[in-house]
Length: 233
Image 1: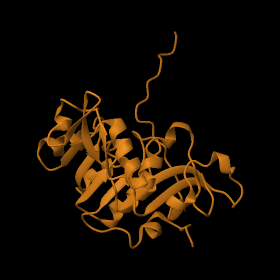
Image 2: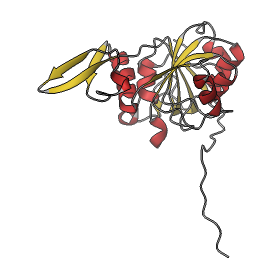
Image 3: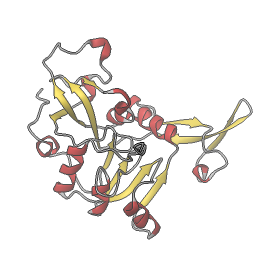
């Protein structure tokens, strides 16, 4: 099975459709599949539901899909750093499903593991719990959270082999693994594709069985916020 494609557009060919749900890896601007996001923008696919920790910034990451009005709904845990996100949400143009960060990761993981839902105490007594089933276990109240199963997962890794086995670099792993597993189809972009057998099996973070298509990308790797100390006189 051929998994390596020449470009992001080629890797996404035949997978995109209006109204689809996409799970996207990344945290802030760290470990985001920037090439695949740009290809989705160029494809013009609209009315998207995107499950991701956040929506990038105004001119980068998932923020470029907000700018072009291609996103209908975000399932996120953090929505700061993006003025356009705020404007669209407050004006009623964008739906938002707030999900605590750990719950979001577990909803993705559960979707990938074939678990339709789970109970968690996180969010009980807050707006997060409104409309959700409540159940008591051992004297404590929990709410039912449904798993996320996406039509497409897009993730960014550090290294891969042609079989799609992925290695992530340090904190850039973040949401990429659970996002990848919860997609019916997963497309990954990486910085380097190495020959089969070059990756230590014990160091593989995501087995290739979860990855259907793969590209070697060119990555800008922006810094979301830079704080520096003033030079001494």
